[in-house]
Length: 455
Image (tube, rainbow, N blue to C red; front, top):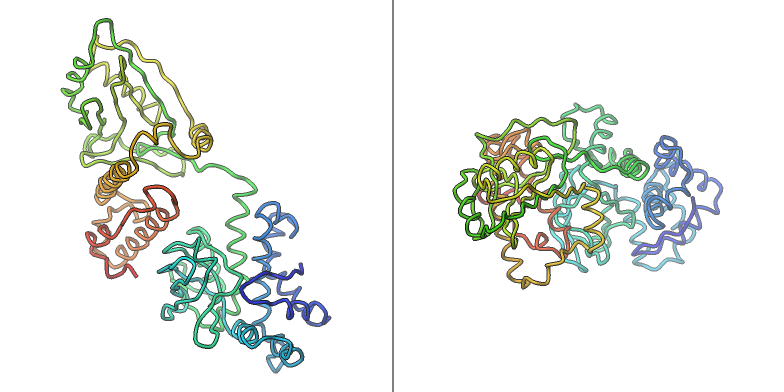
């Protein structure tokens, strides 16, 4: 596992030195094993297999994390590091700034940081989530072009003269990886299961391999056994997209059908030819989740949106997201429109089919160019406003089943609300080149009374 890792500063000299010196080569191999072996043995893989699974660069970024740990390790009774030995023997061959970087890397522990501000191509501000240290602004070009506000990254912040840099071994941590890392740190430090880990610099140094392990144990299972999560709607029904097309009966005009639908109490007009089928909180069926998974839904001020209806030509189109709602929707339409419509023709699309179609069209609908971008953006912004305002009064699993308005009333709940809002913002920012990426969540922080904690 030896290779020169490309970074902002050249570590080629000390990497070559470590491989040439037998004692240091053995120590390096030992450190690398600490980082990789738990995952490789668990999933029966070799290091070379990682390139096929993670891509060519990721394994060497992970190796770089292990090498940076190696640079910080103290050996022998005098606590000697390879950096001390290398600079004593070969320091003359290093440029001044590169030497300062290597010395800084020796002393900087890896930690988990939250990205609280990004200036793409220039810098970013990081908050250390494990030591409680003050936020630090680091100079960085490449990583700041992909990282978003509230991302969590494992990396070393390296002081170099009058500024700070980040090391080359940077890993972006998903919420699952963060949770696994925290579990590992609690076990290593013998903390309570609910305690938030708070580490000293020395504790961070001793726990460095846990960062790579947590990342690998989160990523590898998904790559080895890729599965979609079990998706349901808010009624706990399996997600499946149904479109029911009700042809008009002979001689029936759109106005007759529209008048019938306007009179239906369950339907709310969205326009002259469109309606939302709503289930109010009082009338909504009790959720019956079949197995653990993710519940997806759309909300409006009147309640959960169960379906959408639209008049097109000589037909009424009903779109719903489960076979159960399709059956209930057909009954609803027949009750409202009666003999004005013929029996429906139904098309069904699974989640997998919908994703394939989306990928085939590059995530764009065929009608995307028919709406001016500024109008489409305004429509989407208004939709997001309605959707997120409705979630304030909806139970959120991440908040322990409480609504956001309920959760902010306690200190523990307030903390969860802040994390929930950060996750929403972070996921939105990653939806690049879509209206979602431009959405401003500040009003949500203000309305929930947590704006001061948006930092």
